[in-house]
Length: 316
View (cartoon, rainbow, N blue to C red):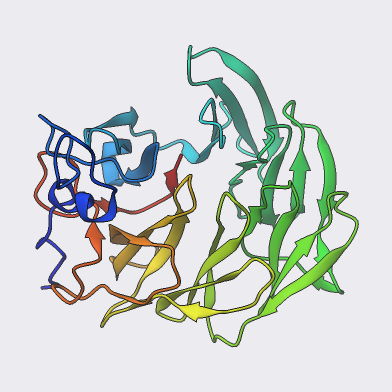
């Protein structure tokens, strides 16, 4: 049986990574036992529990969206106001339904259908200015840029003569990162050209994420996580363990990373991991049990073990 990081509750340890306040030398808020780390909410998917959320100011966990077997993907805008859900389109096997919802009042901002692309589901991401949705490459369409009404503004199916595959990520200036083989590229704002950011000498890599301040890129390389400057310099290993770390996600203030550790396969398509938080400071952090007291297992208030996840994680 795998051992997990149950040895340090988030509600007790966050004070070590926050500036103490005037109420308590440990930095904890009076009456809560929980210290805010960075800002915002963490959202994540878990099994049949649906999409969950944890408010980092209180540590309280709750349901964000109920489980829906027809939900293929989702994203939340950087300003934390809009949600986009992609679900199977009713009575149309070849289409997906995009629904953009205002999180403040629940009203629908936009709703449209598009073809799924052969053997792929869409995973759209809001641009930082909320004017565009970028969809990772599908077998039929490549990378797509959509407006908020579903109009396709741009298709990029190949780059340098090769078909595009893999992840994409928005930069804060609304340029786009994408991968081609072992290299990471960045487009210009007009999406007419792309320049090389970094060629990575890993047999397997991915899960790259950009800090909201635009200064850093984190990624998985092999079994561990790495970070580099946005221009590709200073590539540095930032996690180590006897298992595998995945999915680095920056905090809204760019100071921390939410990560997955103890990555575990449960079948041909099944996998899950547990979550922890580490500083995004180019230090190396050991995720083995009890090895590194600087690691913060992601444990909500009134829970006793690090939260599991098996899908999208967001920190907004």
